[in-house]
Amino acid sequence: MPPAFRRVALIGKQTPQIAESLQVLRQLLRERGCEVLVERETARSVGDGESAADFEAIGRSADLAIVLGGDGTMLSAARNLVRHGVPLAGINQGRVGFMTDIALSDMRESVGAILDGRHSIEERSLLDAEVRRGGEVLLRTLALNEAVVGKGSQGRLIEFELRIDGEYVYRLRADGVIVATPTGSTAYSLSAQGPILQPTVPALALVPLNPHVLSARPVSVSDASVIEIGLLRALDARAHFDGFALADLQQGDSLMLKRSADAIRFVHPPGYSYFVMLREKLRWSENPASPLPED
Image (cartoon, rainbow, N blue to C red):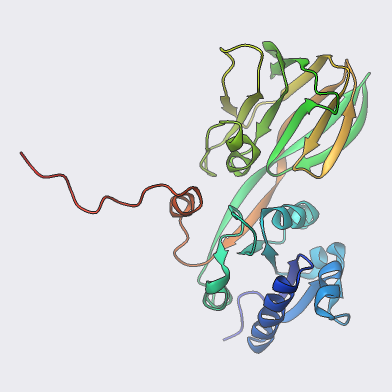
């Protein structure tokens, strides 16, 4: 039976451990009749110049991209491939791995099942972001996890105004604010005491960073909203997007955020469960060993 995905791209960090896993996975894919592409930088770690391809070439021709590493590697791959609609599967060789959900020990079995067509595909939303200054757009980018407005190197609080769909919400002095997607709700937002959003929930989390008022709390809003963060006072401020894109901000700048028309597609092996993943990654308690006794 031909594989469900005929042309597969491999993407990973340049480490000896991942290089070894890439070699094993590349051989497995070829044995299953797949044509294998290796992302150009990744190819250097496995000495495969013949199969090397840049992200543009992968986006044009790959049916599936398999990412070996942690969530940072997956984020980079997702940002580079989202416009092409290439689905992504992740093998976790990082520390936590909320997006790379296939354990290294299960790599052969899980990838084999995916090639057999026994998989599920889940769409994840992204943010379209614009940094504006005086009516001019300084930066346009995407964020799969979060957009962050924060203080820069001087360490002083910034003051900003938040509007949703043009309506004034609040003015706040703080270290900054995170706007997180459901995917990003288990990343930086989680560290800042933000809510965990199930990926199917059409919402965004607004999470203040160390606000100078005790009443400021995280808020979840519809992902159909247009969010505007206007910088009122700041000697030094910056905007970050998934930890990759960066913009230095000035007083009077604004950040506009809305749900992107594009979406990331994650490929999961049989048996994947979001809540099982959360229990494992966050070390929540397992099911009760036995029911409570009756009176």
